[in-house]
Each structure stands twice: as C-alpha cells, then as structure tokens.
Image (cartoon, rainbow, N blue to C red; front, side):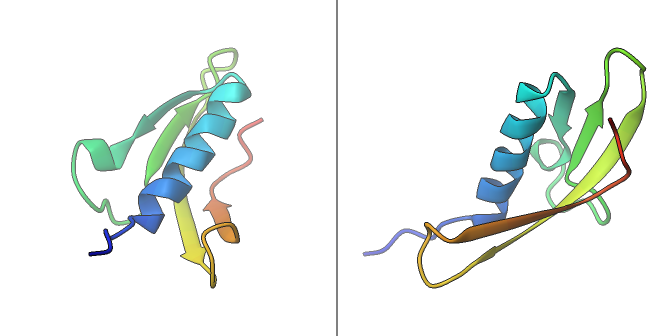
Length: 77
C-alpha cells in the first residue's frame, strides 16, 4: 500500500528551512488552521521587524526528485 505524500507540506518545509538559514523567524500558519486562504507562512526579519505573509505553491513532476516550489510574497530582504 502506498502512503499519500503531502506535497504542499514538503514545499512549505523547504521554504521554511531556507528562510531560517537566512536568519528569518518563520511561522507555518497551517499548523494552527489548515488551509489559510492567502498565506502559508509568516516570516519576520528580526533586524528590521518587517513581517511578510508568504503563499507557497508546490507541484510534483514525474518523480519526487523534481520538486518545484514557488513563493509568492513581498520582497522581505
């Protein structure tokens, strides 16, 4: 029996890890309420205090090694 893979969660986790590596504070909104309409993540630049909401779109191609993730959000650098 094959297990269902949550591609969206994989994409959100990948984006979260990259933002954390860049020094941002990140909250995954889907941990509190499933499927917020316009955002998956909230990140904050702790130096400037600027907060940005991010929507992550992830799609799977023929194999999981070809995972493509796109972030929609403001410039938060």
